[in-house]
Each structure stands twice: as C-alpha cells, then as structure tokens.
Image (tube, rainbow, N blue to C red):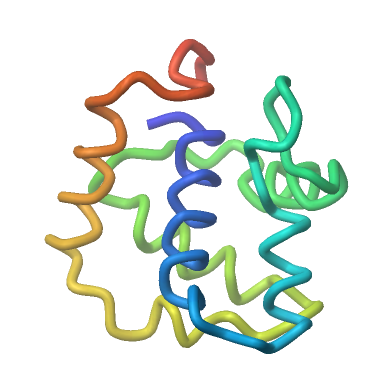
Length: 113
C-alpha cells in the first residue's frame, strides 16, 4: 500500500462514515480531501495532501499498520474533529476494505511509496 492509496482509503472511510451529515465543517473537510478532483496524485486542496505527506514522513505503510497510521493522521486534522469515524473500526473490516480497494484498478496504483 502506498501513501496515496492510504490517503484514499482514509477519504473513503470518512466519506462513508459521514455520508448523511449536514455539518458544513465535515463536508468542507471531505471536499478538500477529495483525491479524485484532479488527474494528478493529491487532494482537491493540494495543501491537505502535502500536510498528510509531511505527517507520514518516512513511515513504511503496510496493510497491517495502515489503520494505526490512519487513526494517527485523522487526529492531526485541525479544521474539524473526524476521529469518531475511526474510534471503533474492526481491524479485519479495515483490512478487508483495503484489500478490496487494492484489488481493483485505481488511481495511484502505479506509484511507489
């Protein structure tokens, strides 16, 4: 799993968790995170992905540690508290979702790291 794939999984998880929200701050956060607006690798607001990459630093990402990294990352989002979406995730459900996503053709599959 590369850093963009993890970012996309975080976005998918948050988008699904908050799909019925009317909270403008959460909706704005999701809009800014959207990894599918532009053709290149990143987010709708490029600063969001840049900050995510800075958070990652040199962390190695695997399926096994991806949930832990995702939980740590969402804690750093200052604009709105979205940590509730990651509080009670079954690790097996997360890994299953990641495997499903990674097994399909997707944006960013061809990047390293």
